[in-house]
Length: 446
Image (cartoon, rainbow, N blue to C red; front, top):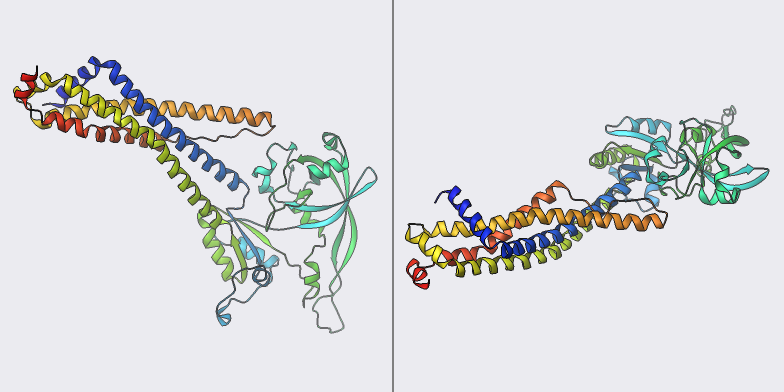
């Protein structure tokens, strides 16, 4: 039997029992819709988590410390000390060498120091943190009042909300106002000419002042930790923070070194061009004699968690599709009972068993295809409804809108293919039963 004849005959049979076949197809559509809705929720939540975490700049970054510090904070020690790489000072030369590595986009130090600001004649102790220009795209500054820094060398400041409330009960009125930053500047002393051990003359601490203009107020605290600028209640451009040469916690350590005038860093943050290059950059930095680590392993563990989460959602969503497959079996078995004469006539006219089997397979496949298409559409509508309801709730809580579901093209294709596969599997028994029907018995039955 030709394919065209099979399709025409199957279409006629489906149209004759349109109500029953439509209900069966609707059952398949509901099963596919539940599967798509659950998987879209899992994919959407994974995309949301990945987007928010990647925007923090933590998963494409390598955090560098002096090797002694790194091991002291729980970093890995060399099993063979003789083969260990010699520890190097984390100074400006080291920063330049790291910046020259392949796939390194940016290298900046962690600058955070205690200070005192004066506003309207009143002093307020606080912590100042330097913010790199690349932090503009971080999620911490979403929805902030005011604006980000106009330039890397602008004498501007962004206040954390708690500090802003200390300065004024009307925080919006602080925008555009001027504050005075009082800090301790580190100044190198002249070289020791007495033949002492030190090659330099150390440094002194000199009080300084800097005027800054408030341009923004951030509600959430930016990311903390190595390389982050968290716990800083007053944020200034990183380039400005470097030019201030403010005394920091590691200055006492530098004072005890043989070359105290050679400024070193407590830590450096290395922004890598793509997470796939993080491991190579991290290994290269370790070979240079520094401690280095990244949060890439945590990202991998998060992907495993979401993969398991998607698996369970897919299993529960597939249950409805399995129930729908029982409807296909019921529909096709009833069709055999109603069409015994038709099957007997087809076989009497020379139709082979495989032709009868193909006919029922085509009918099952058509119902599976239509059910899959409608099911994907219904599942997409359910996802849109979930997004709408979630954002209505978040707006009432004064929170930004998010997208918690996603239906990528691969999910659409996979859902339709799965629906067809389940429908064909459900049609195996009815098709085999129809193919085994004896034409003489079928005609005598009528």
